[in-house]
Amino acid sequence: MMKSKSIHVPVYICFIISVLLVVILFPMEGGFPYIEGNELWAAIWQLGLVGGVFLLVGGLIACFFFYFYYQRKNIFLKKKDLFFSLMMMMIFIVLTETGVSYNLFSVYMVPYAIIPIVVRNFFDSRTAQTTHLITVLVCSLMIPSPWEFVLMQVLSCMVTIYVLKDLTQRWQLIVCSFYILLTYILVYSGILLLQNGDFSKWNWNMPIYFGINFLLVMCAYPFINILERIFGYISNVTLIELSDINLPLLRQISEKAPGTFQHSLQVSMLGTAAAVKVGANPQLIRTGALYHDIGKIENPLYFVENRLAGPDPHEELDLVESARIITKHVPDGVKIAEKYAIPKTIIRFIKTHHGKGKAKYFYNSFINQFPDEPVDEAAFSYSGENPDTKETAILMMADSVEAASRSLTDYSEDSLRNLIDKIVNNQIADGLLEDAPLTFKHIKEIKQVFLERLLSVYHLRITYPDVKK
Image (cartoon, rainbow, N blue to C red):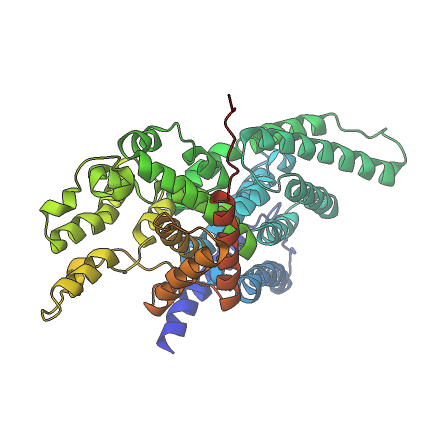
């Protein structure tokens, strides 16, 4: 009961604040009407106007919260996400109120299309449309020609959602801005024809307003970057930029720990394929996979994939010290990522790719060598956190499966299937995946994808015959 209260009280506070703020900012052109000689009726009239504003705006804001409560519970339960959505609304409501009350600029210069661009970039299309629609409806109550305004903005939002399905490159935003500009011009033309039958009342200021709107919509890209830093979000544009292997940190991994870098590429391949299958974010996994083992550049030769020849440095260490060096690559990776200002979402992959598991090779070796001695499990355990998203859970499975597959001598389908089943089932038994939002069906599909991809990597090749002399 206490948990439910702690979740809902901030929501009620946000609701009350948002309604009061909208009512306070709501423009009443010329002030409240005053009936001379009848102060009582004047007061009643004023009260009625305030009540009407409160009911309409309050109802719209309530619908906004109801949408999140019933349709997007994951966003509703996160104060940061809910505040972000509310903030996006309030920014444009305040801009509209300022333009209407003080006649500083036309509301058609305000780039309302930025709302679906930004919200779609961080959440989903339906949430973007809902946030934009509620904002536009509230703003329409301040505008002399509300239905024309709503029609123009709703159609521009729909075009934005359809054209900008996935923002991954800057040029897509430019193309989307042109489509929005074209939509405004066509809708304005259609409204004139509907009302007058011709273009005799064409307002030449409108194309100028639309042009300014077009330029401001293209500013969505730096606006997204600012919001990422403030709220800790990460967009697909940023993910693609971070996955550029020519970046200094990734290039450092490829030079100091080439085996680890190749392993990361293979984990990326497995993870993205599994993500597509179970509805996770493949670009997020791809980028997370490239960075998940960056801590190994501190001691690359202590990891077998980076040793081409020479003695094993672990032979000079006891099992506890070896386990400490191996498990230390997780906190080392976090420190390196923070030094290079890697987003927290990617750092999360570094923390969770081993979860709270153990360095099994050294743990099992210690038990076999000293069967009568008590085992300090903490000395062999990773200091990370268990995965709690689809993406981090998939990466954990892909990481272990890819690493273990390199130890096989038989790459038949049965051998690979048995290996995948063993690795994933052990992770489930150890409780490493208990916080991840994956079903048994998801697990089964992920295993099948891993099998298909590994078979394609380790497929048989024909032997080329030599020329007989």
